Picture (cartoon, rainbow, N blue to C red):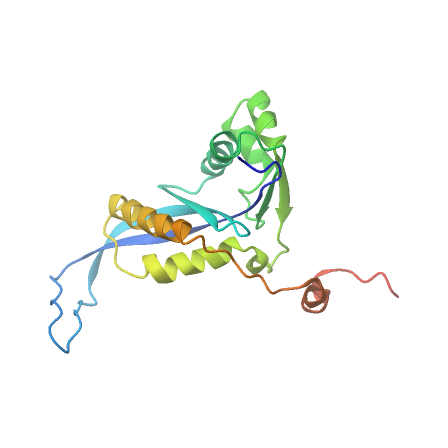
Length: 197
């Protein structure tokens, strides 16, 4: 059953697609596979990542673009497909210019945009504090475990990401967040005005 108030972190990144120009030399005993520094650029894809850090669930969607319209469609998909019974989805993300309620009004009719927005509760990370979004931790893991290789096309990227997502969700990897309120009062002090003269 879907929780009534799921806490979801959201972030995105891009991945340059590249193919080999020279055939790599295969691995041999005592010698790893060798790749030439030269490559051919095949474009860029965008990855939208949603994560529930407390439950160990994540979902990544590969898209061709990263526009306000793409963002709006991701929000509608989450509301309708993943959390149809949720009363409110608590969504944490950074302050990128497309991460705004107005993006939904760009993509959908006003009634549809409002329906989606009524299910979302936005929590923005402070400027220069996007590292507070636990989705960035998941993107870092995704980059180290999956994206740190040459990927020639979007189909290959989708397969690689889907395999990574399936394995990570199966392992039910949660995030052990150790940044406390006391830590925040010290580290983020410069971002907030003081009420004491």
